[in-house]
Amino acid sequence: MTSRPPAGPAYRPLMGILFMCMAGSLLPMMNGLAKLMSQDYASEQVVWARTLSHLVFVLALFVPQRGWRILRTRRPGVQFLRSCMLITSTFLFFSAIKFVPIAKAASISFTAPLIVVLLSGPMLGEKVTLSRILAVLVGFGGVLVVIRPGFEVFQWASLLILGSASCYAVYQVLTRRVAGFDAPETSVVYSVLVGAVLMSLLVPFSWKTPESLTDALLLASLGVFGGLGHYCVARAMTYAPANFVSPFQYWQMIGSVAIGYLLFAEIPDAYTWLGAALIIGAGIYVGIWGGGRAPASPEPPPSREST
Image (cartoon, rainbow, N blue to C red; front, top):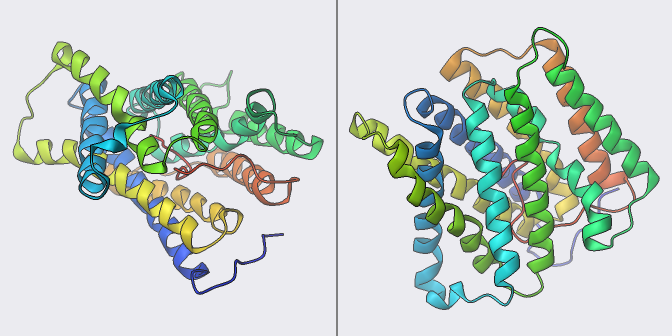
């Protein structure tokens, strides 16, 4: 059952659904452009463009309102580790996306909320019920259906996507831990701060000057799409309860299929659809019916921050 709607005019479930579906459309566009740019540019440069443009975007959005005090944090160690987890997740995802179809990558990345369930006990001290553990096992069974280890269609890069989802799950748990100490805006900035600095140090070793203005704009747009996707998720959560709108994050699967087809003529096979159905079903069960929601985040993910 979904939670009871909050009283007051702020409860606008249709707006919540709309913003969540917008996030599910924007983030596949980012992933598709990352895959497109990775054909001509090193992963380091694509990740650098994504993190730096995202940082510039959020600073331009929040600094005029809150000033540079937005950088003050009461948990610098946790914020640093959060940012390290997110940049690792992004780097693994963008490194793999050049080899893995977008819809398949999205399916595997949906395991992040399931991994959060496993981590919420040891890292947050939250109770994890047997039914939720069983749902997680079903979800991971879906991953095996998608990647099919031991078969000719297996792609090693799929394991990078799974590693990316694991790092993103740790990032979500750490976000939960820091939520009571720092403002969400501070966490949003720190989420990409370490990545932007680190990749700025590494990108000169793999730098390739953009071949055209179009390429430069596409690289710069990665962070804008990512930032807008995160913003749409946050807005969705303000209009309706998280366990009501969260299932609509799986609209990203449809967006991923559309972008994959339009940009690369990719069509998911039946195993990808079956595995995705198992993963998504497990995620919805864990989030709504599995004995309580997984840890929420003030900067909730769009099914993927992923990246």
